[in-house]
Image 1 (cartoon, rainbow, N blue to C red):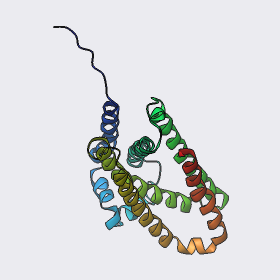
Image 2: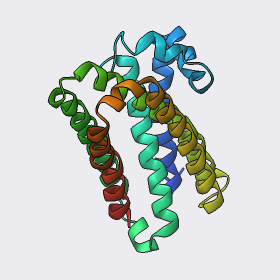
Image 3: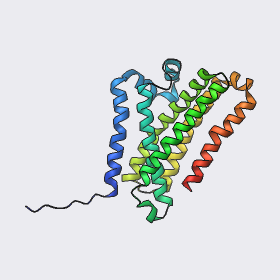
Image 4: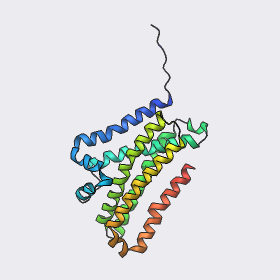
Length: 217
C-alpha cells in the first residue's frame, strides 16, 4: 500500500478548537455538578448568583474553566465575523486566530484588572469584586450561545450573516439581562457615587468596546 498525503482543510483546526473548548465546561460539570446546573438556569433563576457571589468570587476553578471556554468561543466567533467581512487574503493568514485569541485574552484580563483596581481607588473592593463576578458570569453564560453559533457557522450555515446577527442579538440580550440585574442590585451604591459610576461606565465599559471595534475594522 502506498502512503497517501492528507491535506487538512480549514475546518479541521476549527473542529479541534471546538472540541478542546468543550472540555472546559464538561470538566466543570464533572467536578462541580450541582453548581453547574445552578449556572445553567442563570437567566431564569438567580440562585447561582445568590449562592456564589460572596462565597468564592472570581478566582475559583469553576469560574476559570468557564472563562477559558468563553474566551475560546468568543475568539472563534470573532474569527467567523472576520472571515465573512474581511478580504480572502487576510482570512487565509494562519496567525489570525492566535492573534485574535491573544487579543481577546489580554482585553478581558486588562479590563477585569482595571475594574478591580477601581475598587481599591474607591475603597469598595468587595463590591467591585461582586459586580465584576456577576458581569463575567453572564458573559460566560452567553458564550454557550456563541459555541452553538460557531458550530452552525462552521458546518451548517457557513459564513451566514443572518446566523451571525442572530447570535449577536442573543449574546447581547443575555448580557443586558446581566447588566440590569447588577444595576438593580447595586442601585443604592451607584446612586451614592453616580458621577464616578458614569466615569467608570465610559472609561471601562464603552471605551474598550469602541477600541475593540476599531481594531476589528
